Length: 205
Image (cartoon, one colour):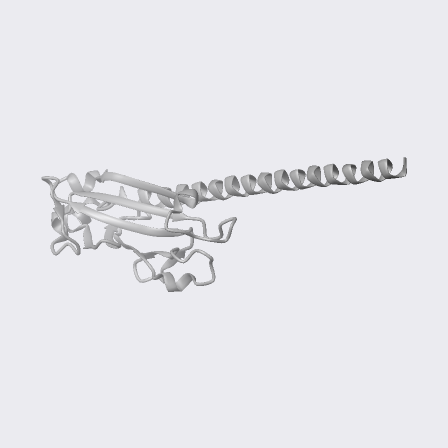
């Protein structure tokens, strides 16, 4: 009778332990899923904010409320490289042209983040100190095309030939749930591409 009771107790402990382990695994899995979805939501929010800024500025290349300041729209873009661009636009609708520059910084500027590939995006207006944005961006690339849709090699030697722009941006989580990165960032990357971005001011030639 005593040995049977001991076996029952041991059996109950084993079953209880297995149920506890299953519960812990389910809880860990639920936490991981929640963290991954939350990280994905933050990535989407970062990408949306960045795209809104870029599209607002880029679609106004060559714009000025005083049209006489932009009589020659071909001179609106001043620098056209694969990772940087400088152009003129009227940001404040005050009839004065502003110089706007976008470029990416080196990965060495964000060594405090876990992601080894993220970097700052810089936005500089006129001679003001550049605004640096840390949104988990790992890539921002520009491609330029002429009026015949022929791609121009970068840096573009004559920015007056630029008629269309292609922009591609990749954003990754700076702090992933598992704190590790691999060569396949598909689980923690958001990619956006704007194909054939053209402003009516550049096309008004």
